[in-house]
Amino acid sequence: MKVKIDISAEYKEPFAVIHTDKVTDEISRIVDVLSTSETPVTALKNEEDIVILQPKDIFMVRVENGDTVIYGAKQQFRSRKRLYELAEQLGKQFMQISKTTLVNLSYMDSIEPGFSGTLLLKLKNGDKDYVSRKYLPEFKKYLGL
Image (cartoon, rainbow, N blue to C red; front, top):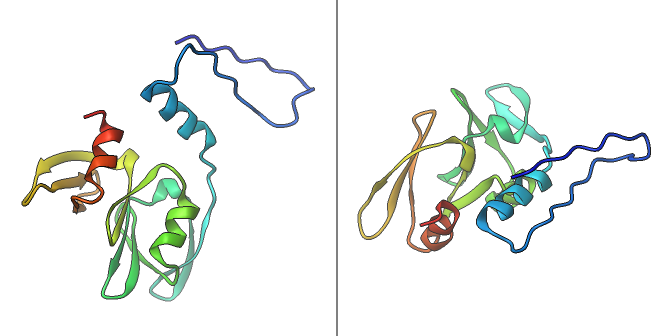
């Protein structure tokens, strides 16, 4: 793929133009990466502190016993936000893999076959969860399977 960068004072905000004969999975992924904004996630509790996290600091978000738990590299945080609110805020680098779980796709480590047609997704920080059958087609499409 050819890449060209044009630097000029006339551009007040960066923008990208892609010239192609058809939209492929690679082009779709590039568009997703370019259009993802790094919006900070606010008001996350870590014991007594309130912590500000960027999406790149989050490996997984899971609802556990009615609480929304956000998993970082080594720490867990609690949020008052609901799963769908965090999914909207975190952007396209996150995918819902079950009714209760969102994962950061850039931190996938390995995938193993699970029970009843599910897949076990392991993340680079050691966390793991199952991709349920409902979310499996979209997940496989992302992987190109």
